[in-house]
Image (cartoon, rainbow, N blue to C red; front, side, top):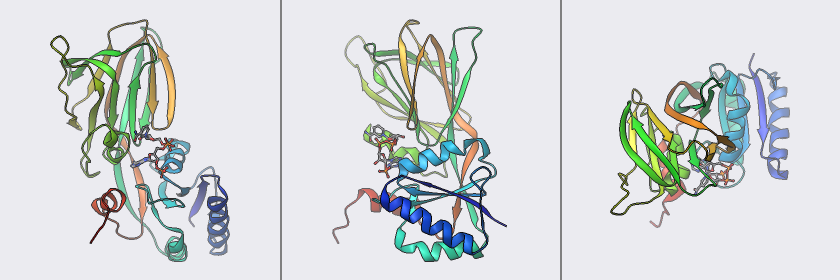
Length: 268
Ligand code: NAP
């Protein structure tokens, strides 16, 4: 017996679709369980999907996700409302295949003796400040790589590479590549200060560490859509997480086709 839950963007169209899907699936004797679902159906956009992911982040190994978009085509929300009948029958009658995508692990080490905060991101972690420029040392695999000065850094997952990372000039990475990408935000580059200036892609076994130079600065650290303010940050450590997100797959919709349909105008 499959247990499901549905999250909605909250607008009229998404709420109506949520109620319709719920009543159809209940008719097929599936169980609505908000606490321990096997399947989470997100209705809205990629932003709604990010919220669903963070709501069920504590049970990623037991929950599979599916996204339906009620606006424009999304990367996580890749089903359209007119496919609903087909999707409901698939969910009710067939066991689903699972496709896994990598996640980003972020550890924030505060001053000595204080608790380390650990987060998982589906899209990215961005590090900015409201106190002038971000100034930090970037270490890769324990070795000093550069001193960064600028607006900040964005460390993204492969599936997040089409989001903020893309706007920063980062590469689009296929989610089968277990990696993270570091993209700069407006780095200061002149005769005195120098950074690599290109996005860097790290494999699973390479960690990066961001070590702020000034202890007294506060940082705005965003994990997907959630921003927190930190002071006295010693190190922000980023790596590919051991956990993964699981998508329920009922039909093929290749990543590069989603990239094409979202970003490339088809003028043929
Ligand atoms: P938002 O500012 O309301 O929306 C950000 C936009 O990013 C929405 O159009 C959203 O799609 C889209 N998006 C989210 N994940 C994506 C993905 N993996 N690939 C392609 N597009 C994606 O913020 P939000 O809804 O809370 O989402 C937070 C995300 O916004 C962050 O994770 C970050 O990636 C993104 N962001 C982007 C920029 C930028 O591009 N300059 C700046 C800041 C943050 P939907 O409309 O389908 O929800």
